[in-house]
Length: 114
Length: 114
Image (cartoon, rainbow over all chains, first blue to last red):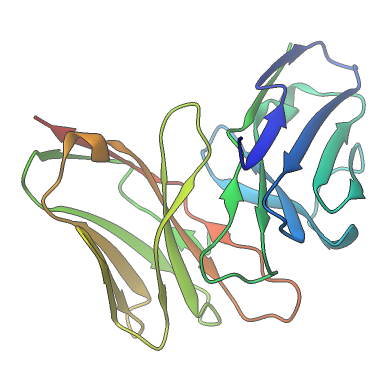
C-alpha cells in the first residue's frame, strides 16, 4: 500500500513524442507537487495543486501540463519531448501547503529522451 | 540562483563516528528547514526538521543545528551506521501565504564505511 505511487518508474521515448506520468496518493493529502531532478541533481518545483486547484506554476515550458482529476491524483503530461527533458520526475504530497513534517515523495519516474 | 547550497557532494565516515552534513542558504525569508534522506531508486524521505525559532532539534541519532546569523544549518548523525549511507538533501521553506514549496539543495552523498 504505497503512499505516493508514480507510474511508470522508467520511461524511454523518442524526441517529439507525447508522454504522461501518473501520480496517486492514498494519504488523504490535499496538496500535490511535481518536482524535477535534473542532471545537476537539484530538486526543483514544477507545479503544485491544492484540492485540484493549481497554486504553483514555476517557469517550465508550456509543453508540460499538469492535470488533477481529483485531489488524490496529479498527472503530468509532456508534449513534444526534447532531449533536455531527460530527468527524474518526483511526485509528492502534503497535508497542508506548508507542512511541518514536509512532503511524502513517490519513488520517481526516470524519463530518458533519445 | 541557488537559494539552498550543499557544497560537499560527498562525505565518507567510519562506522560509529559522527557524520556532519552542512547546508547554507541565502534567502533570509526561510523560516523552516528540513533534511531528507534518499536511497537509490527511491524518493526522498523526511528525516528531521527545525523551525527558525530554535537552534537545535534532536531525534535519536539525528540532530539538526541552525545558525540563523550565518544562514547555516548542519545535520549530525552519531553514531553513524552503514544503513545511513544515502544522499541527504537540505530543504527550506518561506512563509509566503499559499505558495511555499520546499526549496532543495543538490544533496550530499554520505558513505558510512564498516
